[in-house]
Length: 393
Image (cartoon, rainbow, N blue to C red; front, side):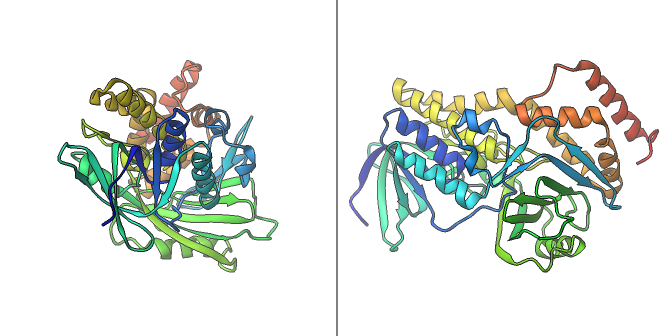
C-alpha cells in the first residue's frame, strides 16, 4: 500500500451531487480530491428543471432535448396530455452531463482521481484515512479532514460511517438507451409515463426523449419482477423494438431521505447516498445537486468553526426546503401506485387543468405552490370524490 497522502476534503463519487460539492469546495479555496469510479453511467430519464441553469450554472447546450409536456398513460391505455404552458423540462444524457460536471470541478481546482473506494480507516490521532483501489489495482491511502459520501444508493461511505444507512429501501431501475425512431408518430418534445402493473407493479415505466436517442425504462422494488422483459414489452407496444439499442443500464434508487446524513465527526452524505430522490416521480438530479451544495456548505462551516455539529446543517436545510414535498409525494406513491384500479383513477385526476398547472408549477419551482388556494381546494374535493368513487375512473 502506498504512502498516505493528505487533503482537506475527499469527495467519494463523481455524479451530480459529488461533482457539485467538489466544485463549491474548490471554489472556496479548499484542497479537494474527487474520487470516482470509471465507466459507470447511472440509468436515468435525465429530466431537470430549467432553474438548474441559473442555480448551478449549467449551460443550456447540455440539454439534449426540451420537453414541452408529458403524456400519462393508464393501465387500460387511456392517455392524458399535460402540456407545459410556459417553459420546458430540460433533458440530459448522464454520460455527457456528469462528465461535464466533473470536468468543471477540476477546472476550478479539484483534483480528479479514478478509483474504487473500499473503506475508511483511522490514524492513531483519529483522522479519517480513505483506502481506495486505483485503476491498476493498487491500494492507496488518503487522509482527509472531511469526507463527502456521494457514492450512490448503495454507498459504502454511508454503510460504514452513518448509522441506519444499511436499512435503506430501494426501487431498482433499468433502462435502455435506443436510437430515436424516425416515425412521424414519435414526439421528441414529450415525456411519456406509463402506469401499468405489467410494466411496473409499484412504480412506473417511461419513454423520455434525448435528442438523437431515447431512454426507455422502468423500475420496481418488487424482488423478482422482470425489468428487462417489461422494457421489451413497452418497446413492443410502442413499435420501438426495431430501434438500435445503444446501451443498457441498471441501478437502485433510494425511496426516501436517510434520517441521518453525517457521522457526527467528519463524514457527510449527499445525493443518492443520502436518499434524496423524490418519491412518486423518481426525480433525483436537481435534488442531488442541491444536496451536494448543502453538504459543501456544511463541510465548509465545519472546517471554519471546528464544530462537527455543523455537518447536520446539510440535512436540516434540505428537509426544511423539500421535506414537505417528499412527504406528500411518498403518500401519493404508496396510495396511487398500489393497484391498477387506483392508477386508472390517478390518470383520470391528471386530466384536471388545476392538477396539471400545480404539478408543473411545483416541478419548475421545487416547492409546494401556495399562491392558488382555491385551486388546492378544488383539487382536494376532486381527490375525495375519486377516492370515494363518486367520480368514475
